[in-house]
Length: 251
Image (cartoon, rainbow, N blue to C red):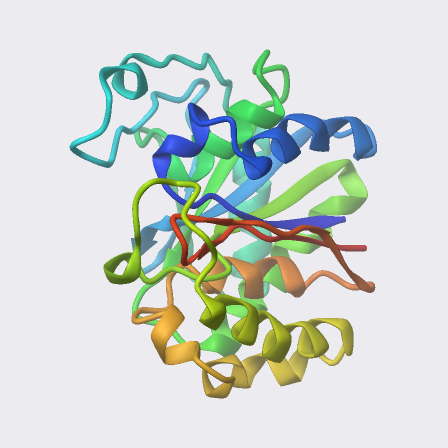
């Protein structure tokens, strides 16, 4: 199984929204897992890197938020042996990759994961998105990473179904912009078709340019969707009018 999760804004950790509650419940519906591989929109590197430390510092890669976010601690472990295996598999798959022994994990990873695993009981390895890149290369990355599901490793792509920060309206409970549903309606048949090749043309869908001025928050969906199996929508809600917090499983 792989998951795509929309992490929205960092305030997802503190605000009691439907997406917050969904993530808190999500783990109880998952099979037993031994580790998480996560690809976040917030780590892009020229060559793929894989975190390989024994433990992870949290990276507070945002500004202007309440002190509670910067004071939050989550003592998550790494999985160096898994990280080495991931790098080996990527190289075998023709993807240049290296270990990063020092990097922590960014909020695109730790905010949703700390809601899912509040006791930090499952080790985490983060994999970067290559930059610059193309849709086919991101899908290929996901295909290699999805191989580890046979070892009880959960692959998670953490981005946002929609991510136009310039159109955000406060507060978090603002009514949904109608353009969000129009994009959902264009995308969902593509996901449900099981023809992953159609996803290569996601940027031609209705309102794709509006909802994704840049593509890094959509690319984690490509990573998750590369796993074999059918697509299932697990959650749908919207925050700040234009941030769709949808989640999908591929199994």
